[in-house]
Image (cartoon, rainbow, N blue to C red):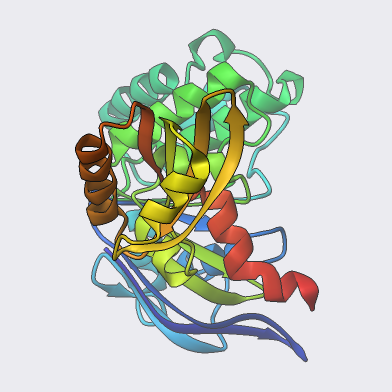
Length: 313
């Protein structure tokens, strides 16, 4: 549904985006993850035809953003970084105006208005002037305008900004529900936001895509491997010696010793296979085992590994 090819954006001598290529399929939630100023909003403004790229192009629902910008806009619901709100209008008045501007019939306006007010929990604010809304309710109103025309592609720039924890959970659930039939691209610099809802992730820093894929694929690209942790009632020296004899073990060391119990961490080239070898070893030696599990690397660790050179620069 979204195919970006070699997108670049230059503002004079400043390169805001360089050679960005990625794909988002129908029913997929793709998270753009990067620090502030990384180029996330620039990508979104290009895809929504607010900006014309210096190089490259993109297809949205089979439409070229450069050749058919108006038709592309019809397919997209967009929540920008700076909320497109008219503060002197009431919530219901504003959403009705947006729906009519989108070309919806009167009956369709009523149908979609009921839907977005329910899904964003804005019904109690229907007659409230937007200027009197809290930051969280303004964010919800801006999200409602992005959904009012039932778009095929939804692009959200920092969609949970200003929301309290309960509201964040509601919006996450809504995004996951929408992904059953729509394509969703959202940006954030909050790591747990991506972990909570994204199917795949694009990590961007200083205008360049550093890596993309599932969290497991990103870990491989960052060369950040899972760890095996075990708690065993045996001399740590004897256990370490035995572990080093296993073919898949790359590194093993003691984290803590608590009386007769030792907690040992193991790095392995093939962690699942090594996990099975360790279990078989403990069974064969009749070693009491209290814990044996695989710990996948966190997205935070992966992100830092992929962007470390940029921060150093």
